[in-house]
Image (cartoon, rainbow, N blue to C red; front, side, top):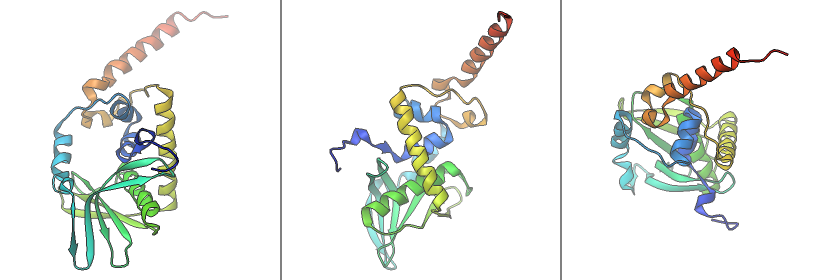
Length: 210
């Protein structure tokens, strides 16, 4: 890594997906090093079992790289691509594996777009397309790496840097996202929401009028 930067100066690609889904989840995982398994993480592990073995192959003129290390020094991003298909002209086509049925999720698209930006910096080739492979339905969903998505990668990366540097834990969202989160017992969003509600009530009850 250039300019004297160490690995600790970089943000994991997965952090962009975590932050886009829930900033508090991102902080718990990437700042507090908290992790817990549930059925969703187990399914995710199963979906990644093949690609995590690494290696490459040639299929119909397309070179396929699995578990490919990635870095983007411009945005201080580091991680791995589940699969990258290198087309006949050398253009990279990243593929991110996700469990569950085929459906559009912005936080997944941000992670894929970040991989595209890493590949552009590493190869010097424009990466305009990638795909999310949904393991349950065995279907790909192609994603266009638009200027808007590129900007979202940059702004999310900057927001994560600011969050980690501040040392402050973002508030719990306490909504439908929490039900599927493996960190719900660590985060305790309902308890925090109840404490905030009681604090608000106390402030209203004991507010001194001028």
